[in-house]
Image (cartoon, rainbow, N blue to C red; front, side, top):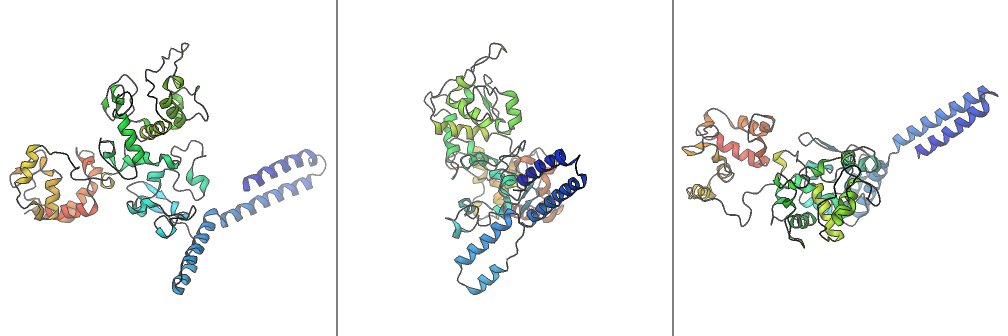
Length: 414
C-alpha cells in the first residue's frame, strides 16, 4: 500500500515541478512538504500496524472461541502482542516464523486456515529448537509474508520451498535417506526418486552409471553431488535456458530435462556444445518432479552432528564378525550403564582402549576419570566439532542425553 502511495506522490511531485516551478515556487514547496509529511505518516502507521499484529490478535480470538474456562479466557485476553522467534546459535537460525504461525504445535488447530494451522510434523520435530527455515527455507528474520517467504526477493539464495519440494531438506538431518531400503516417514517422494536413481526404472539403469553422486559413480556426465547448492544465478551461468518452457529457472530446467533431456539440451554447433547423452527414461510428470526434488537435496549438510538423526543398527544389516565377537564378550551388555553401552554400540572402541580391549588409534581411556571429571569430558564432546585437528569431529551423532551418559561413564573410569 505504502509503495503505491509513494508512486502516486512521485507522479504528483513531478507534475508540480513541471507546472509550478516557473509560476509559484512557494506553492511547489508546500506540495513537496505535504508529500514528505504524508510519507512520514504512512511509515509511522505501517510500523504500528504490521501484518503480524493482526494475525496474533486473530489467533488470540480463535483460542478464546475454543475455550470455556473463564480464567483461561481472561489469561488469553491479556496475552502480549509481540514478535516471537526461535534462536539457535549452533544451527545459525533466527526464525520469526512463529510470530504469525503460532499454532504449529497445537493439534486443536489442525483444520484451521493459514497461518493458524497445526503442523503435523510437530509430532516428530521440535520446532522450538530447530526453527522452520531449516526445512522450509525462506528468510527467517522476516516479519511479513513477502519477506519471510522470500519467493519474490531478487538474489535471496534460499526462497521458501513450495509444499511439494520441502522433502528436499530431509537429508540435512536424515542422511540415511540416501541408503537403498531405508524408510523415513514423510519423505516418500524422496525415497521413490532414490529408488529410480538406483535403477528401478524402465531402462534398469542407475544414474551413477554416468553421473557421480555423493562421491560414487562415473564421470561420463556432470557430477551431481552438489547440485542442490547451486544458486539460481550460478545455475543460469552454466546452463542454457533457451529451450525451457515457462519461467526460465533452475527448477523448470531440471524438471523438463528429466522429462525430455534432448529437448532441453540439444547442443549448439556454433558454440561447440554437444547434445546431452542422457537417454529419455519416459518418466511421468510425478517421477520427474520427484527426481528434481532429489537432486535439489544434494548438497553438503552443515547441520552439526548432534542434531542429525541416528540409529545404532539398521534393521536387517549384519555386523562384521569381529564387531559381533567384541559385543558378545560382554555377557550382560544390556544391563551395563547406559554410557558404557553407548561406548560399545557406537564403536568408540575402534579407536580407544579400555582395560586392554579396543584400538590404539586414539588415547587410552582406561583411567581417563583420574585425569578429567565429567564436566570437562562433556565440554570436550560439545566443542569437538570446533577442533579442526580432530579427525573424527564430524562423526559424533549423540543427543544431549547420550552425551551426558557417555561423559558420566568415562568419568567413572579410574
